[in-house]
Length: 171
Image (tube, rainbow, N blue to C red; front, side, top):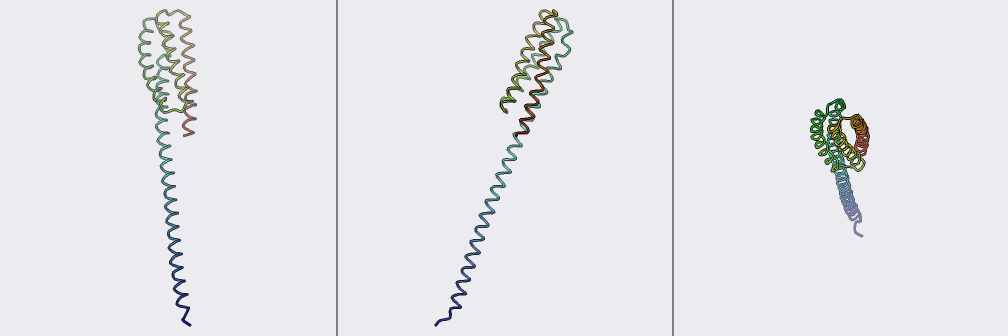
């Protein structure tokens, strides 16, 4: 009878090599999968941060323009009709900058922020109309209408800021 110990030793060695190879292969696949998950997670985090920074810049730009509109019109109530004409021209420039900022918000979103930005733009247009009426005829009724419209415009800034903050928190 031949010596079986040599055959057992060969089979044991082959099994050990096969098991080691299989374990190594499974480990490398697991490591590759883990690395892929890590890369995907990092890329997603960078994408989200990029979106957040872009939105933040757009939101800040709109807030600055909205505040410039309000600041530029605060002292208009006491002006003469001629001075109101000059204020109307200056407001037209600020309104166009606000419009550009709102257009950027339309690109960045999300919808609640877009709606709040559009409300500001619409009210800025209404301010133009009220200011034009005051420039044309600076009577007490037109001045009162302008003051009320300006107050309504200023009240719309806070809802935009709140919507922007919420959108940034969700990003």
